[in-house]
Each structure stands twice: as structure tokens, then as C-alpha cells.
Image (cartoon, rainbow, N blue to C red; front, side, top):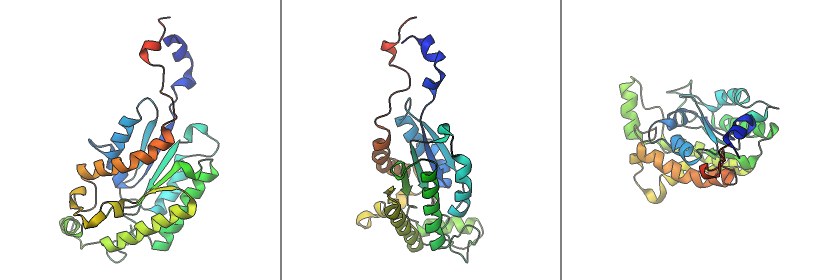
Length: 237
């Protein structure tokens, strides 16, 4: 195929998309060494990886945003895979952080609502990956809270309840799920090195997340062709 023919065929240059939807842990994932950046590198010339992470957001706000990110009837909006990664803010303690806190039952309903919305716009469950919140290092996060002039506003035990709820939603809805909360604490290991401030991911945590997410995502993207032919196969005219 000649380069001029390829360029004239505009649809050939439209990449499939992978949507990363979440809170600050997703927003920050395109930083150097971030898990989102690593996914984009793995999928270069196959998919455009879109970062739609919103720092501080919870599932109550996320379910309102999702229909504005993916619209019914627009094939260009239809990603080959979607990650939904919320819970770190939803699980904030109501008394200490009422604005971000979402009751557990509502968190469950919101996750289900998002999966059902995706299904309604022709994105089936097998394209969706739910990710549980990571564990919380209370000692480190309390230091951050003090700097911000507040009390400790999250507890790892409570985060675990939201992680378990996320697992149950995945089971009920038939989606893939990455249980980050459990994996990072496997065999009672010290997970503090996975976190930069007790809540957000450190470079090691980003690498850990990527290494466990990629096998799930690879299954959904492995059959996609490369964008444009290999350079040796391009005709001169």
C-alpha cells in the first residue's frame, strides 16, 4: 500500500480507544512512570488511551459524567475497553469528609449504573474492567491530613468494605475486576511502598497496577491490527 493511499483513507487513521475513567489515581496515571502512560506505550499504533481521571471525584458525580464521555449512537465514542476506578473518595469517612463520602449501598448502585449505561450504548460487560481502590496507609495519610489542617478522614478497613463491594458488583454484572486492595496486601506484606502519601500510588505502585492490569487489557486488544502497515511493506508510490 502506498503512503498516499493510506493518507487518503481517513478512516484508516482512526484508532480504537481505551478509556480510563476514575479519580485522581487515574488522572495522575499519565505522569512519568504512571500506569496509564505504560498502557499507552504498550498500545501505541493500536489504540488511543484516553485519560478521563478527575481528582477528588466520587461515583455520584462519575455516573453523571459518563454519558457525556460516551454518547449513544456515536461509533467514535465506543471504546474497545473501559476501566472504572473509583472508591478511594467514596470511602472517605462521612463525619470527616462529607462532601466526598458516598454511602456503601449508593456506591454499589452507582457502579452498577455505570456498567448498565455502558451496556446500553453497546459496550458489553466483557469490555469493562472494574478496579478496586488500593489499600490506605493510615499513618502516612494522617500526616497529609494534618498538613491540610484536618483529621484522618479515611480508614483502611472501610476502604476494604468498598473494595469488597466493587468485587461483588463485578461478579453481579459479569465484568472483569482487578482487586488492587487485596493484591497489595497479599501475605500481609507491607504495602506502604506502593503509595506516595498513603493514598495515591508511588512509582512502585504504578508499576504494580500496570503489571496486573495489562493481562486483563491485553485480552481485549490483542486482536487489533497495527495502525498503518509496517514500514518495509509501504510502497514508494
